[in-house]
Image 1: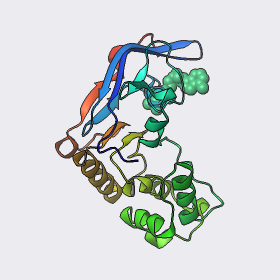
Image 2: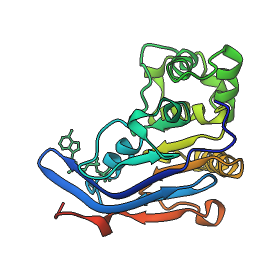
Image 3: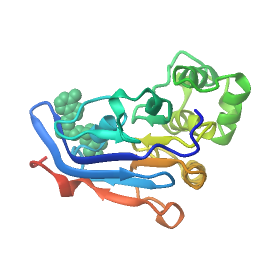
Length: 218
Ligand SMILES: Nc1ncnc2c1ncn2[C@@H]1O[C@H](COP(=O)(O)OP(=O)(O)OP(=O)(O)O)[C@@H](O)[C@H]1O
């Protein structure tokens, strides 16, 4: 990854269907380098579904999501400049914390040497558990390990984060806020969901309420 800023994300008149239900329609979306976008809306409105569209993991019913003008599903460059952390932490129970993080870094093409993994864990204050098995961690600790990837992201990419604050304590929230703030200041961008209130004074997020684009009752 060599680009100096995050990709410019754009979508027009986006509509999303899951199964038989049209979830939302007529959504215009833009995420610029340096911007933090907070996606809000009722349970089941389609926030996770939208994040999956943006990450190129599914197709829209109508409209295209583009990154620097190219459809995300066709851009290998975009995939290298994207960090997607879903609601499930994707950590393997039978690996140690360090191994599980190294695995995630490796499959996403990021530096995965021991020093990098240890630095990432230290940034989320998980250094003392680095040799523990993932299955022995609490939910908040698992979330910290999954988020540790962000601490060693080498270039300003687009971070797509599904409920990243979920299960974090006050210290974890402060650490994540620090990562988000630093990332945006370096030209990175963020699209995230959160049912918990964000620190708007610190993060200055742009809010999008998906309820305003509802296509049908939930
Ligand atoms: N694989 C699937 N097949 C069919 N419908 C699905 C599938 N996954 C999700 N849905 C439906 O799509 C709708 C939107 O789900 P989604 O997870 O995107 O909502 P959300 O806004 O993220 O919700 P929450 O705030 O509860 O996390 C829900 O009604 C859900 O039941």
